[in-house]
Image (tube, rainbow, N blue to C red; front, side, top):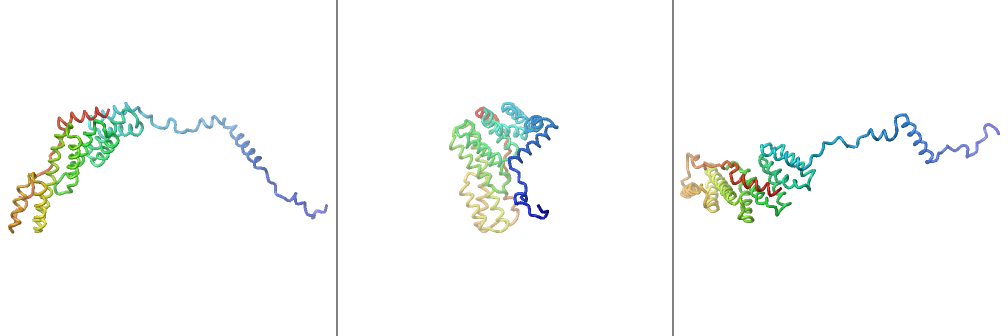
Length: 279
């Protein structure tokens, strides 16, 4: 055949290997490479899938004991970690109920009142028939009133406290917290009255007498038992007579602040009862 003669079409086609052949060849190559480095079992045994790398999960009863020990010495940060670990890792354990309650207490005694209120509300929603619910409702009120610190600031916390304590007294009128709730509610109302009076005095100082009279009339109508009421009536009388104070307005300011509330003997006892109810 001449050298320049055209080759048959079959001879000019590129060489295509079957897919099955390619796969078998690759598998053989991998097997050969592994034979010098150990067996397949050796390779997998050297890989880690997380076993042994994670911290050992402590039992719920151990975490509860650690949490309560930290809580009783006011180490609320560590106590909260233990209680939250119970709710995260052991949500169906017998200790989970106590952990939910004490986690809320940890937030409260750490001064995180908004967070504590949410924890208490969640507990009440999840366990509406639990014996600790009256305590939880009382603590919700305490979270509210603890946000009211000075009469020249927003009185929303005191207003919320009145509603929260009123709800407790309405739903559980004979609970161990009735006396305490009534006392706290009276203080919340005094805070609201003093705030209203403070605003009225501010209006007088800035010579906005009509706004001051409106505020004083509202205070007298809504808080008839407030301790600041005699001063409010006296100031209103001067304004209506057209004789607003010209000097020494500071003497008209209310000298009042919320009392410092420690744990009373009754509170200590009922708090322990709440713990027992949640166990």
